[in-house]
Length: 185
Image (cartoon, rainbow, N blue to C red; front, top):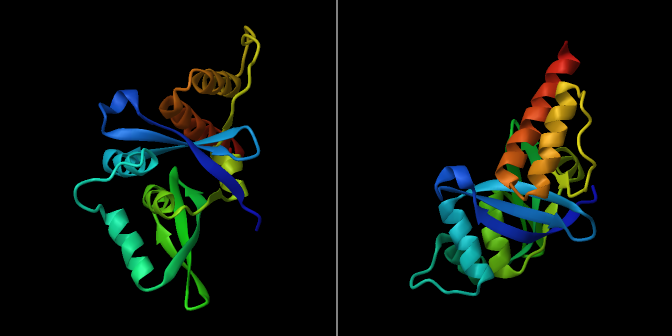
């Protein structure tokens, strides 16, 4: 399977969480889609510290994992966000050790916190990108009469344009549930 390379393009607190959750925005390296992932404060802090090249006084667990892998001569080759199930993203940390390729199951936030520390590329499975990403498109004002699905899609477009990624992620999930329910009926 050919994965889609992404870069970290944003990390910001979600307005309604009071700083407890953050939106990590991944953008296609060669496209216009953005993938918002809601992560915890601790993980966001760990990613942000590394992106800003700041060293905490004591090593974080991600630093310990990096150092442990280096000590046993294992190399992180890439991080892959490979699944989206019931609104939850799943990831794999891909690495080599003694010439053998292996994978570790991980939360995306933890895998990305490690990836930024070791300079490993981040990839997303095509179906995850298709189902959970958003395009930043300028659209005309919404028509007066719209179906419920069209209204939700318009709200999603507005949220993306306003860079309200938490709301956009909620709307994306709501649209997926709505479409799933319609297919079952």
